[in-house]
Each structure stands twice: as structure tokens, then as C-alpha cells.
Image (cartoon, rainbow, N blue to C red):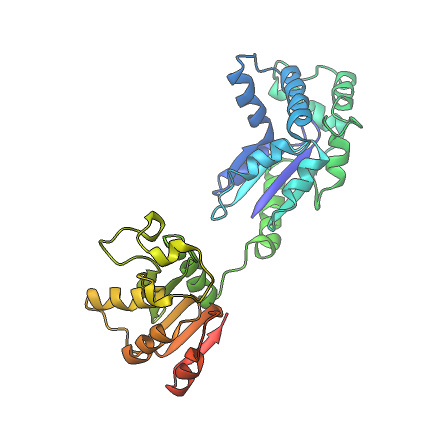
Length: 331
């Protein structure tokens, strides 16, 4: 879940962010990205300098640059709250995230002014008229400047903060209760889970032709993995270990000259090497097996093969699996 908070001066953005941090959310402020730049340039951090440099960065890197910087830091395994969203392009960039939602906090200007007086920051406006003037500075028609008036209009949820903090916190709790199931990413199925792991294992492959991987599972537990590449102790394929793979000839030619072991083969051999039986297991593979690997699958007792892509040189492997009563599915 990624929650964006926007609103005018004194609307309670920091209060909401701090409350969510107490509930294990990670807080990112787009203004902090500008603060870091000011520190690097050894420029004093003031509101005036923040606005000036923010406009400069948007002009140089694009109007959504601050949001893009924060997006790179987001850990999809955690929940996040993002504040200081003041440009419509920042909202558009963040809304490309599947689980992002923007809240606009609203309060009457008189109430917001009273809060500003209580917090008593040096650069906060000292009169309502000054507050109105400062807010006008955040309502530019220039896409490279602050456009808070357009940002608040893009909110998915409007939350009135016109009472006490306790009531605001109750509203946040109700919001989380209502939106949590909608914004949390859907859990992958077991098949998707193990196939995703297989694709991650494939990144270890050193083959010059294609990267494949296999994962052997028993009772929803991984017992072995394998990826294609040169045999143990030999020079890696991408280091010139396999002449056939480094020849870049046509697909399917000179297969007998390839010294690389296939992913399914390696996963079965690794289990055998460590004394683990693969009888009655499920093999997940990023690409359906060749004939040689199919024979290993059948003879080792694997009961089901779940594939992602079809091997272009199948040559009867699928028929062999079916005749041997090994279940085959494509995911």
C-alpha cells in the first residue's frame, strides 16, 4: 500500500504521515529530495530555496522528477506514505504504481492558520493574508512549478481534518480498514510463486544462447533448483567454455557439440548429489523440457511438470511425458 498525502498549509499532512509511520509505513517526502540537493550544493535550507530549486529540478529533469526519485526507493514488500506532492505530474507518476492512492486533507483556512500559529515555525505565515499569499505561490500554471491547486483536485479520497487529532486518527484507521484489501498487492498463487522463483534462478545462467531454470517442489517446499550452463569446474559458457554456444549459429544446429547442462537436468542432479529423492515432486521450468531432460524427469519419478514457455525444439518430449503419465501444464 502506497498512500500519498496532499493538502494546503496546516492541513495535517505531517500528523497523518507520523501516525502511519507508527503503523510500520515508510515515509518519503518529495521535499526531502530537494533538501538533499541543497545540502550537496551547500545552500541554506529555507522554504524559498526549496521552491526555487524544486522548480529548477523540474525544468531540468522533467516535472515528475521528484516523484520518480522516490519511486526508485520504494520497497514493494513494505507500505509507504509519501508527502510534499505539489505538482500534477508527480501525482500522475505515482499513480502508475498499482497500489497508490492520494488523500487530500481539507481544513478551513482559519483552522489551518491557528495550527500554524501553534507550531510556530520561523518561516510560517504570521497572518491569514500572508498565508493566502504563500498559498498562491504554490498554484502556478507552469508545469515545472508547484501546482497544489491541481494536485488536490486529483485526490482519490478527500478527508476533512476539521476537528481534533484523535478524530483524524480514527478517520485514518477507518480509511486503512476500508482500503487495505483494495490497495495491497494480490498474493501470487503457489504456481506463480514457484515460477517467479524459477525466473529469478534463471538469472544465474551463464549460457550464451538462452537463460532457463527449473525448481523442484515437494509439499510446497523447494528441494532443488537448477539453471543451464557449463558443468561444474569447467569454464563458464559466457567465458568461452562452450564453443557451440559461442558460435552464434542457427538455433537447433550442432546440439551434440554443446557441453552445457540443461536447467531440468541440473535440478535433478543437484537433488541426487545431496541425496534428496525427487519422487512424486513437481518440477517448475521456465521452458518446457527437451527429450533428454524429459527422460530424466520420467525416470526420476517426477509426477508433474509446470512450464512457462514451450521449447522450440520439442521433438516429441511432450508426447513422452503424457505417455509416461507425467502431468504437464503451461502457466
